[in-house]
Structures are given as structure tokens and as C-alpha cells.
Image (tube, rainbow, N blue to C red; front, top):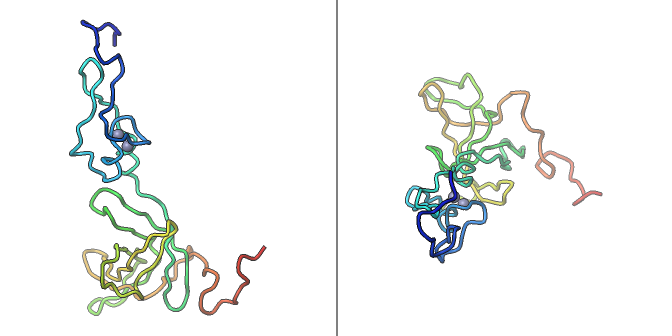
Length: 183
Ligand SMILES: [Zn+2]
Ligand SMILES: [Zn+2]
């Protein structure tokens, strides 16, 4: 790329962003666009010679990766911090999906032969508060008890017997009460 411009650039050599506030994490979008994941609708800035700004946007890239979180889930009276992935884009967008550590059953097929993941949803008004759980980012989710395996539907019934189950979390039923914030 050459630095010579055919005529003087009246606004200076650098692209000047429009008045709306820029995204703190990328050079190419406004904060509003990145916070709302509205990249497909957004216009990207151009370089001063008019060529489109065509570098990949770091915010778009970051959003394509699921975010690792943990969700506190209690089943059978045992509370565990369950590893999960929060999907911000793609067909699971807005969903949280845990590791495969649940057992499931179907009236038709009996017990599911493999451990299944749990899918969690955003709560709505009127969601039964007993189904609401909190993740490591402090966000609320609703437990989903329907699971699929080989195109068959199963219902999550409890913790599976897999050996990589996270240990029970402190403060749950059945565990010894511990002093708060033990030093
Ligand atoms: Zn951005
Ligand atoms: Zn951007």
C-alpha cells in the first residue's frame, strides 16, 4: 500500500469516526453495534482513500466463541458448580449448555445410554423461581429438562454416574455447614 494520495485529504489522513461513541474493543464499530451484536446491519468505516476497512473485527470473533462459565445446579439435594458454555452466536445463541453430566430417561426407551448436557434458557416473567439458577457471571438461567440423544427425546432425571462430576458445592443439603468465608 502506498501513502500517496491523489489529492489533499481535507479531514486529515486518519479515518474520523462519526459522532457516536466507538466500541472500546475494536476500531471498526460503534459501542452500540457491538453491545447489541448488530454487525450485519452496521456499516464499516473506510480508510481515508475510500477502500473498505476489511480487517476482521475482534468483537465479532470473540462473540463467535462460546464463553466458559459455571452454573450452580441442585439435583437430588446435591448442589454442584457445573461447567457450561454460554453461546452468544450461532444456532445456540442466547443459550447455556452444560457438560454431559446428567442422566436422562424416556418413557418409551428407558434410560438414556449416555450422559446428556443440560440446556439452560433465559428466564421469562412467570418462570417458576424454583427452576432458576445463577451462573458465575451472576446471570439467571432456567434449567431445561429436555435432552436429546439419537433424535430421541429424554427427560433429565439426575446426576449421571460419570467420574468427572464436579464435587458437591459447599452449603448444600447433606454437606456439613461451613463457616462463611473460612480463612
Ligand atoms: Zn467492537
Ligand atoms: Zn468492530
